[in-house]
Image 1 (cartoon, one colour):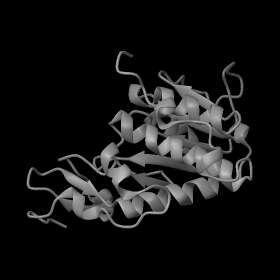
Image 2 (image 1 turned 180 degrees about the horizontal axis):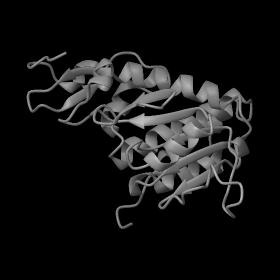
Image 3 (image 1 turned 60 degrees about the vertical axis):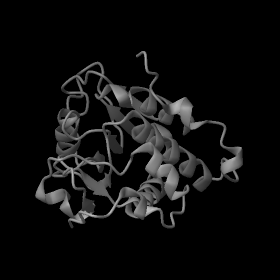
Image 4 (image 1 turned 120 degrees about the vertical axis):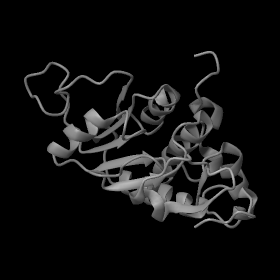
Amino acid sequence: MTESAATTTDQAGETKLIPATNYLSAGIHIGMKQRIKAMERYIYKVRPDKLAVFNIQLIDEQIQNVANLLSQYAPEDILVVSRKKNGHKPVVKFAEAIGGAKVIYGRFYPGTLTNPNYEKYIEPKIVIVTDPFLDKQIVEEAFKSNLPIIGLCDTFNNPKNLDIVISMNNKGKKAIALVYWLLAREILKNKGEIKGDAEYKYSLEDFEMPEFE
């Protein structure tokens, strides 16, 4: 896994959704120095400064696969979650763009997925979390409810109880925005709501958390 001499730009190969350089400029491939064994399979290399680097071709493929899966669900059956601040605007815009997904950002109230008597109880059919560690309460409840769970996972996230992983930098606002922007675009294309990328009315900046928030 370790390639001390290689640089991140040696990944600028072919990707399908956007040019590889766009992934690189968003920093989506930059992981952490801390790594867990379960995430090693997704790591392309480790830099001399000990930062892990994800495979952007794999990220591209993962985003396509997740978009294909989510396209099979009605928007209102999808729940997208982010306790992490850099994910607040991306999840809200994702929910809006695909036509009204359920969204939780910031605090998550226990019982939301497991207690039918709770006033905020909801019944999604699939869940996406931005950070499996910070969103661990909802991962636990979704798992207990036998819901499929998709997680954006950095090198130090435990993918336990997740059904699908998008291996990526889930810390940076540009990286998080890019993933949700692409997912929404591909879902709309898959459903025939837009014919191609040119008809997608949202810019990447629409999904990105402002600096001042």
